[in-house]
Image (cartoon, rainbow, N blue to C red; front, side, top):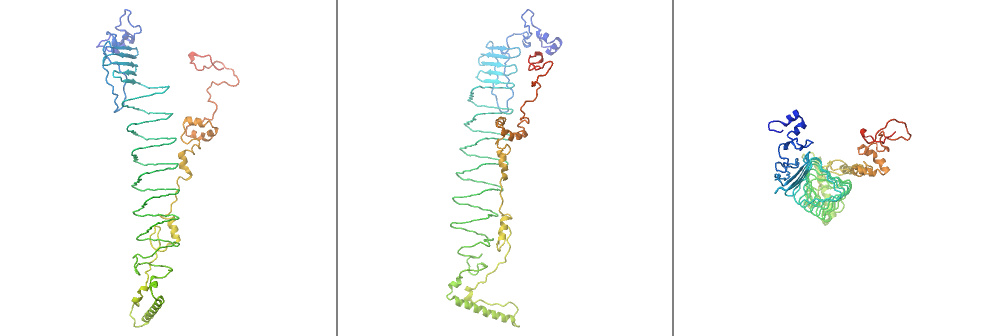
Length: 500
């Protein structure tokens, strides 16, 4: 019998389980012969289920959960007798039909705590202690008029063999703690009615095998804090309906085999120091002047070579021939005087000097010649620009013509398309079903089979036509054998099918 002073475990150890379970059971023939009833908690009391009398409340297992996600399940109030009809099996399965006012519910509970409960407010609770499997042979529709929370403590795999459509009436937020990978076999299209913003806190790489087109129907701005490089193996064309402005605070260079700069209405090339031209370059224009501008005899301009045409003084002179004779007479007279002064014993030390007459200053100009310098690879210096300098400038140094090769041999392209890896049999990493489908063609098997074996996507024995030996195959010729080997059944339930 059960008392408050003794211990159940000690009694079981002393008396045994069977004896202890039958203590307090009358021996008048009304006891349970199996010893299951009454249960220990019902000894010396009413045999009416405690849940029916409101002494206990049967509840489903609702453990687990997630931080921040509430199940919103209120505690069930105890039942009132005789409104609750309870059926409980010896192992602990329970079925309740409760009509207690304010606590009406239906409960189907497994002994493990799993089950289904329909509560008084219409709430449906489904609890699965272990796995839960739902199989629907036809269509399935789920409508939730309130909010929903879906929490998976492990992995979640969602496979849709048809179309997958998602309509979101409000915001659509996705937070990924790890990496996000998307594999799209065909097209990808994104339409944004409002603004669009992409933030990458580290490196960003975009690879396009086909044509890439950006259409900007408004302004297009690019802001680069550090260096920017644009490498194009083919042609580059930049056209503007209005103005193109290219500036460089330190330097600006444009080098090519053929360079054309044309101003249909106006062109201006300026600099405080530099060089324009080359040995085979022609100049056409209205005027050529030195650094001081259009100042007669003092512009600083220097000429080398032959001048074609007439000087402005010769054109304005009334008698050009007389002017020429006067010049010759002047130079001859002064030359003689200078010679006499040099050879005279009493001549003063120093160079002879003479003065050009005022009448002749308009026709005489002595140019100031500039010492020639060699140009460096950056174009610094002044002097003759010969062919060797131009060739060296375009092939060596900081401003030389660069050779641009993008993905030589289409190595990166083929790696992206997987055409080399799978020899044009697959253009993506194949699944098991796709491999089986492709292997219906014998040529595909011979071409790509070895690659799939090396990637451990295909068994190395895939070419073997016969299955491995199982010790139960019949030979072509009969052989004598004693005894038998059972097929399928256990040894205690031998079947009559065997091989000899």
